[in-house]
Image (cartoon, rainbow, N blue to C red; front, side, top):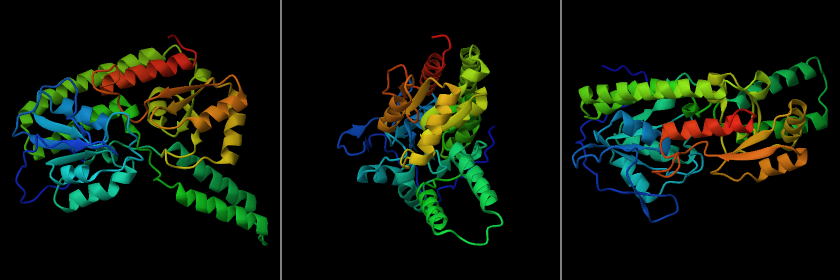
Length: 360
């Protein structure tokens, strides 16, 4: 039997709606998205309809509900950015009629928040999985806290405010307010042990939505074994890297959980935020450039799903630094090497290790 501490509200007085034929629209397109493809058999017409916000959570959920136990569908298509995705009317209708919504939470799905809240208000159970997975502070939030402490110390004892300082403080506060996307890092999927911890949480939510619990037990146990093997494999992949090679620079603050799990350091990010929608800071880019030059970091890891223009400009400015594009927040198309969570993470880790000077 499974236990769950994740936030979940039960649907009261609503019948299970069979919407296996209901198709999701991709952002900005009239072409409907298909059910999640994770090499699982098709669900029956009367299976519970489970809507996952991202392709990663759709694949995780489909493996927990293996053998077609649930009709798992995804809102944000493979290759989409969960921070910026805008839902269509059809997406809203799909979420409003689902038997369960599996969302990341921690303000990852920024532009979906209102739609998720509306569906929950109408009685649809919503599982915010990441909130139950021991989230860590974002690197950007930690940096902001350190900056504020240093700032307070610098100005302690000052009796008179300098106009320039006051203007700079106001500008800093405005920027911080604009880029505030929560102090906790939402990118939990970069740690497979946290994904293994998510399995029983999702299984309990699925059981509450009417999926057979005994069958879920079997699926969950098998998938946890697969994720445990993945974690062991990653330990072996990163083992050749020395401590001074385990330094990461990213386009936006997305690799904190990977660094936390496998003893890497996040030196900084081009966009000093866990959101890809935040703005770059010229002053922080100057500081990051100096840190990269001082440490000799050979690569900046950018998001394939977003522009790498700022990362490219920084790399060109420093010289002898390569920008490596990866799918950081989304799976690839079904049927590709990175079309499943396990394949996605393994290939990304191989890319990271090779870029940092480890064995290819």
